[in-house]
Image 1 (tube, rainbow, N blue to C red):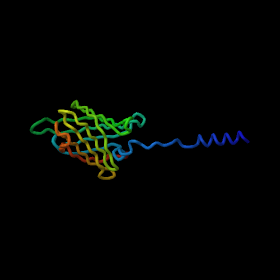
Image 2: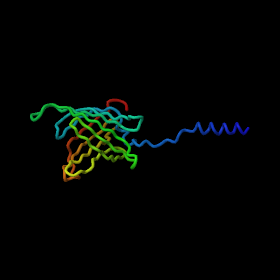
Image 3: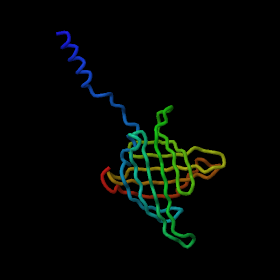
Length: 172
């Protein structure tokens, strides 16, 4: 009888679901998937795509993006490609991001989020501009984004550089 009780107790422990940890990337859920967008700003009117997906078995989010700009009087047509990896800062337990683009920029971001928005903000460094990228949910399958730049020496004087909207291409 004692063996049956011990076996039943052991089986009940095995059958229990593991402790579920909260998803540290929950604020990004509204951005998961593939998106198509269009916008305007200092570089001119353009269009492009971006995607945001889990990678490395759920330990990071990877955003891949491109924008295409037609030729204007002052410049030829061009394409801008970028890659951003969002990860959890183990010490602070907060999301951070690192960004790379086809123009040679590398930007480290802190992340501030709410239920319907995610904001990436770069740190202030002497003699360097500061960057802020905000995604705001505008509908079930639509988002608005704004990329802002603060000039060197004025780290809080952000001015809009690009404003765009995007719609989800398909299911998350």
